[in-house]
Image (cartoon, one colour):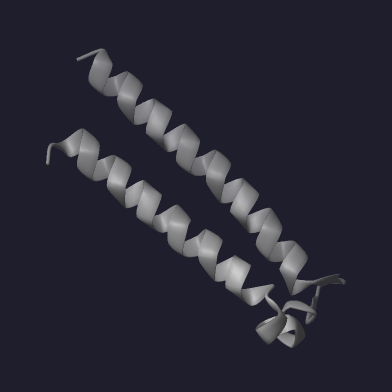
Length: 72
């Protein structure tokens, strides 16, 4: 596995764990945890925002790394 594939796999693993962790939190089993108020909003809302922001950051990191490797 070369460095490009390894970097991509790590980013995918981070996002997958985060995404499914938040999805599990908002499931019916953990609805009480998801409804916990944090700074005036339910924890589920904060989790959703975290997933979106993390997706943007990971995409940016990936594109920056691929651009740097392409220019070498």
